Length: 323
Image (cartoon, rainbow, N blue to C red; front, side, top):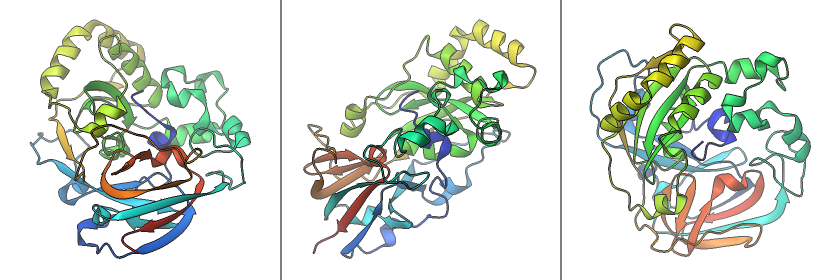
């Protein structure tokens, strides 16, 4: 699902409560440590007031800018101001489950120990493939959790991160989801009543579109802008019979086609990488270099890139700024 991850549907705070204008922060040297979480990404300015009802006429907006925060334990440190400065991240060799806190030798499903991976509903296979939801069969790992997280309005969208793709997200995750995946454009096209329905619509649309992001191309930034409204219209025309069948199957009002305009996004990147070299804390416990930018969940350094979300639960010592 276009790099859809557990964090997409399940993050505990989804960057809420951490809104800070990083540009106003001094890049003072700082050292901090703790268990790593996915970076917080807080849209600047008017983005915080985006109307998600889709009832009012759509307006064309200026690109939405992203303010990033490095999250270690309970600390969220604004990052944008450190672009152009040296950073050093050191993995201590300790990994703790992001759910129960137990020490684990290996991280499963981005930050979980194996017992939690096997029992938690947010680690079930239907999270990655929502069309396989088995709640109705009475086999949901935690029905209450499913009702609170999956039986909520979801959006099927078009995005442009490395080219045109289709994806899904909880309605409350706009626009965070698109920042997370490094999209430069996104357009909600269908609203549904629950996660299962979003999966069914996405499966239909995947007959015509890709659902994955080429992360290397995304980081290089050599991605042409697209006319997402025209792409939407062509897709809906092509899939009209299949979508009508799903609407009939799911019931009146469950699947609603949206008429809105695309959003554009800007990321704090000073220099995009020419050749993408990826770091892995398991193989390279010390990652350091000049911070050139932030995009998706990646730190872009002059020495390479690293996807911090991949290492959720890893105990990290971070040094930011000149020492």
